[in-house]
Image 1: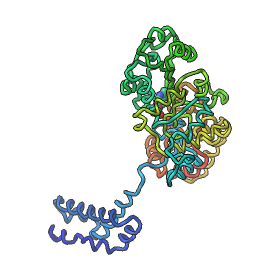
Image 2 (image 1 turned 180 degrees about the vertical axis):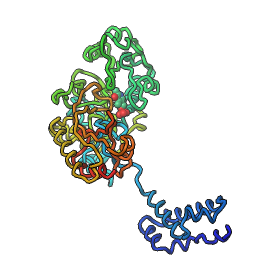
Image 3 (image 1 turned 90 degrees about the horizontal axis):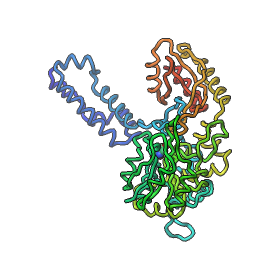
Length: 471
Ligand SMILES: *Cc1c(COP(=O)(O)O)cnc(C)c1O
């Protein structure tokens, strides 16, 4: 057969449309997407045939000679592919609770149910039901935030980077903001205090040195153009040795004397004293407010355990300035975030509920005994599986990380499932773990794969086991 004869064998669109399988695709996914795929696959076939030098041979080698069958299978694949989600859940076995690449803090189901209720219909997002007039989107959670932190006023923006920018733009535009050189941090995702400062229109005035800053450095830095004193919680590193930073109380006292607002970027922002749970105490938001800091900001999706947001609390006169700033319009939170903040904040009305119902806090405060029992159960379940004979499985001690820049030097003992594949390299096994329908993300350490029990959820164990054993 010559090329033209082959071309003539390419089925017409109508012929394909008549096929039962194509009709099924149309009723399931819709006509437009199916038609597009049909045209695309037909075009591909024509191009391929045009390029083929020895068509007869190549068709025999790579195609079924039944073009209709061949095309239908391609169209089906192409349509189905377009309806596969690109963003999918994964199982986090890394032991990093606030893993920015894996979406930081997971939200509780009850919290998400509330968001769904608000988002799927109309709400009083910016509507005051008492007066019938326009309301504030912050009204839904401002009181809760004030009650929990002791602040006078509160608001929230898109994320903490936006919060820092808004604070600086509102209090420091055209002025200088004083920061210790020991706190000029860069945190993940290229957030650098000096750069954010520049965009905000405030001028950075660095004082002190990397390892030591004294109160007198702040004092000498103050002039008539000073717009604020900024403290940044150096959340993702610690300078140890010959160091000195000025205690918050002293900076606050200085700010008061000179009538300059003191701003603190807490980064992770916790409401709960973690010292009670055997960790070194991370400064709480309430502590900063009670020490008299004028404006405090922190992330919504770090240890707070809620949606992505930048939460700002502090003195009303400063927060009002931010609410009125035009930037706020560009950085504002949506209704999903407002709803999620409200429901998560309610959990904080009692510490016990917060620890139980906020997934990030629950994982953080899991005891070693709990984790050990869970990982041993997981190991047992996995060993029962048929495919597990190809794996060496044991349980061993490891260390979890909080992540998100919080408590960088905290040692968080945990237990992990350690897997050594017997007939495959650790690297290829790990790669296959990532290619599972629900990908499993672990760590490779000492020639084995480690799955930290702290960040895994018991309810996922059956799935985890069948995926691991099936590789
Ligand atoms: C994480 C962090 C930020 C940025 O917060 P995002 O919510 O990620 O924008 C800012 N400052 C500090 C100190 C942080 O740790």
